[in-house]
Length: 458
Image (cartoon, rainbow, N blue to C red; front, side):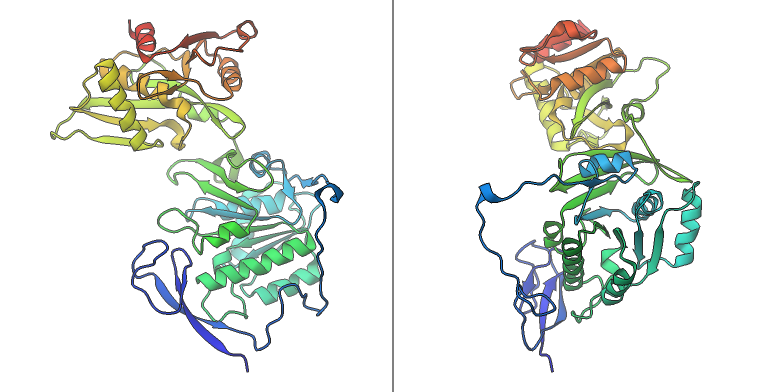
């Protein structure tokens, strides 16, 4: 009979311990250790042996002798998803999609399964019944459904039996936390079960060259539930985010072995499913009937995609003595640093003022190229002077008040010109090497923050 062994796992990070601990030494969380019984086989089969007992021998090969091949990608029919994946699905890849409950992960994957033409899709659901999935499929599709099969099962052994009979081209699992393997004696969703089920699906994907999509739950901190090793095992990690009170959803690439790891896809959630947004600048720039203070437009980049976003600032007198600092979609610490630059280098007294910052459209931005637009929006609100809606900004601001250069300035300028902007403020160091004559938009190169304010506010 097989021996059993119990171990304690941290439910936050997956750290394993032989005894119970109050505080996890890996992630420093308290009371997260849970005992799980792990089944150990009596005779351990070496990892390099397959199930048939044959031994695979790998020999070292010189780099020059290895033949380079071009990965053929499968187009999903979803332009936004293909862009985030780096040009389409790679055979044998495992993609993990995480997001908050109700954000639209299952809808996105079901749309994918229903719209791919010429491929046999197996949609495995451990959370919904066949009738529920059928109702959603009828709601989100208006064309004849693709070669899509629905399987409501949570046992990996039964899933692989159906896969052997069906031989699908793509497998979608909703969700990885609901699956359980007979090789592990613990409840579904536990660290050991999630790790083992993912490892089984990973072996299947690599041996059969079948792409596998895994939908994953997230914790209250916004990270994917389960051990951190889960993100290391898969090839691609995608984050589906957005506000459930707004229609727009953002698909962000966090890790991608077959493409850029900073790509972005934007969708709009409607009653008929998710609609692709091909021009994100349309949703990130609000339509204004009149000029308002505290608004500045910035040219930013998300992966290889240039887009213009609207930064909104509100500066008011601190009513309760201690001024408030709040930002939505931007790092609050960086905003405080920029406010300190205004105080020290430009003489604006903001220490007794409340400052609120918002990035329109519900998007989160980490690009330092929006620094200048944020400072201009803050001063515009502070002085109650509007900025023309035909002006945009693309520059980083240093601690000494200098305007620093940003990368790929040509793409930012071209996007601003395409959307009808008349002037763009850039760093003086970015002007070197630029062919000014090829742009119809006026390029204003500045080196200090005082130069920007003198041109805008006099």
